[in-house]
Amino acid sequence: MTDIVEDLKWRGLVAQSTDEDALRKAFADGPVTVYAGFDPTAASLHVGHLTIVLTLRRLQQAGHRPIALVGGATGLIGDPKPSAERQLNEASTVLDWTGRIRTQLSAFLDFDGDGPTTAVMANNYDWTQGLDAISLLRDLGKHFSINQMLARDTVKSRLGGEGMSYTEFSYVILQSNDYLELYRRHGCTLQIGGSDQWGNITAGLDLIRRVTGNQPHGQAHGLTTNLLVKSDGTKFGKTEGGAVWLDPELTTPYAFYQFWLNSDDRDVSRYLRIFSFRSHEEIEELERESAERPAGRAAQRALAEELTTLVHGADQCAAAVEASRALFGQGDLAALDAPTVASAVAELPSAKVDALPTVVDALVATELVASKSAARRAIKEGGAYVNNTKVTDEDAVLTDADLLHGRWVLLRRGKRNLGALELG
RNA sequence: GGCGGGUUGCCCGAGUGGCCAAAGGGAGCAGACUGUAAAUCUGUCGGCUGAUGCCUACGCAGGUUCGAACCCUGCACCCGCCA
Image (cartoon, chains in turn brown, purple):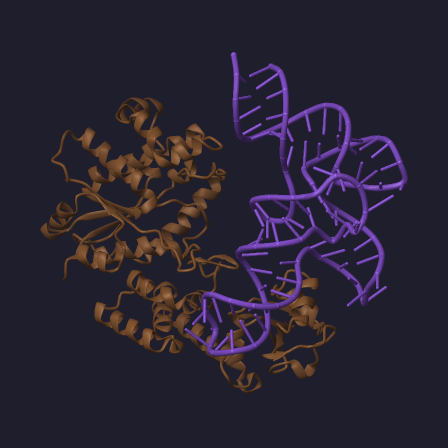
């Protein structure tokens, strides 16, 4: 195996790291125990989280031991954002989300067996819930300098803005304590995270150093990855519908597949390096192909298939590929057999109706448009389709002739927003 | 605590009594071009409705007026300067 640090750099994953040479040496000397934390701020992880999750996976494959930490406790406090105070979620909600995220994380790492690289699942609620006020203030708080805490960018930004609660201000203490706990319990000596986590990570390193006495510098390490930004300047991982979730209930495997398939040519190479587990040679070959014949979208297809398979499994991926082929294919929709249409429709936002409505109502029912006005507008603009045929009449009504296999009508707004109507 | 300025549609921002659902820009959406890409150009962009009608909207609550985003009163929040 090549040097894992080199590999991560080749992927463009390294933003900042503590003493890089010491980290290389630690990796070379044997299994390093590494952790990354995920706060339950929603019911599911989203594609943005994959950067770190998959880096943990990479590190495990490179012979190290990953700890996936779910922030059952820190999720109740809230990591301060530079912009504004977070809205606290109900404790019962956070508990529910903690469980869901724990389940999701467990799919990406190998927890089987009891070897030196077997993954560990942790929840900081376990050691934080019992933390009493005196221990927090006397044993932990004494190691934190208010001067340093105030100097952090996020804090400065908030003090210049809408202010910050003591709750969020204290967040860094809990995360630092997490690192200390994992250091003690599991010999964890590396924390990774997004570049916005640098301050929290170094705070944890400081705490470890102070509590364990002046260990030789470099005993514990930190590494952050770059925030993924698209070529058009917008945040990675968002679509019209919001975040692209890993939970199939929130983002269907089909939508997930489509998300990757629609990657910008300028971004796909970076995505492959960050998310793909193919060899460097294969990735470089895909990059070449993409550069020479972008219309073939070989890189996007490879990326979409690999990630859909990883997150949703081979069967779901195959179904998404099939549905995409059927829905965007050149052929006549009426020529598709019933099972193909049925499975394609299952991937789309759909609505059941008792009687055939107008095209306008059908567009509204499938939520392809926000209102009747928007539906009329879409038709007027030539952006509405029934079974891939443009609709020109604003008052058009669906008829039996529009039914595919007597049951379904495929609706489309614009180039790639599809929905289905099912006669029930 | 005192004085002054501000609060407009998803965001920024013009508008100071009727011609304002409200200039302009951005985002979004659609069309053309394409490759389910980007860029570009064009159109569109509160809701309902059989389209020239109705409802909702210019921080909140009242008031003046035939008529108010625009005037008056009170309230809330924000920003400057002074203490």
